[in-house]
Amino acid sequence: METIDIKQALSQIERLLETVAQGEIIIITKNHQPMVKLTSAQAQPQTKRPPLFGSDRDLIYISDDFDEPLTDFKEYISLIDN
Image 1 (cartoon, rainbow, N blue to C red):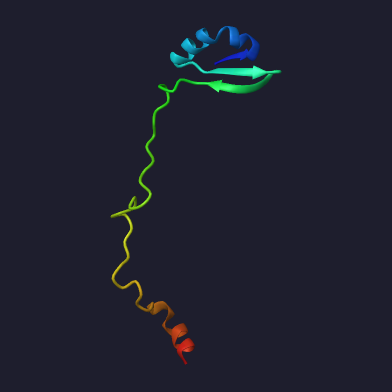
Image 2 (cartoon, rainbow, N blue to C red):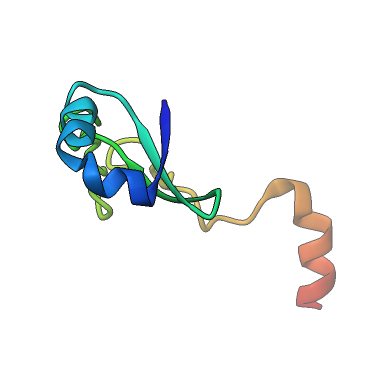
């Protein structure tokens, strides 16, 4: 990774772009503070986001007895019903 001041970078922009195209990363600074990070657009893999709706299809299901009373809470439920 190369770091270069913005004043020097302006006069060397063609060389910097060629360096970045080869996969290197260049940080351009101003007053010794990082200002810009140059990276190649081709070097970074494009990650495709999975579809939002239906992305868990066949992974999550609701059982047929989902809304049936639970036997573990039979005593509690009988107290509420009375």
